[in-house]
Amino acid sequence: MISFEHRVLSEYRIKIAKIETLVKLIMAHRDPKGMEALDASKFLDVLITETDSFYEKYSEILSNNGKRPHARSRLSENKQWNENVEKYYEKNPRRRPRK
Image 1 (spheres, rainbow, N blue to C red):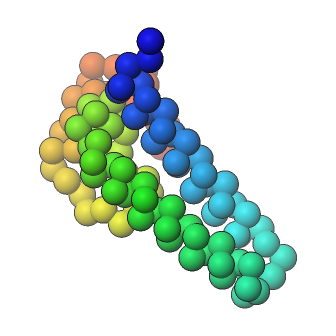
Image 2: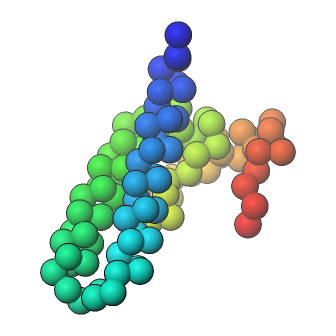
C-alpha cells in the first residue's frame, strides 16, 4: 500500500506541475492582454491559493521531505520549515536541487 506521506508528496508534485504548466501557457499566449489570458491568470491565482493552503496543512510532512513552498507561493518564510528542509538535505546531500 501507498503510505499517506507518499500520497501527500505526490499530490504536492501534481499541484506544482499544474501551476508550472499554466504559467508556461500564459507566458506563451499570443494575446497576453486578451480575455483568455486574463481568465487563466485568475485561475492561476486560485491554484496558487489552493497549493498554499495544502502546504500549510501538510507542512510538517512536506518540509521533512525537502519540499519548500513553491516559488510563486504567497506564504511567508517559516523558520521551522527551513530548518526541516536543511536537516533533510544534510541527511540526503545528493537530493539537493541545483541552483
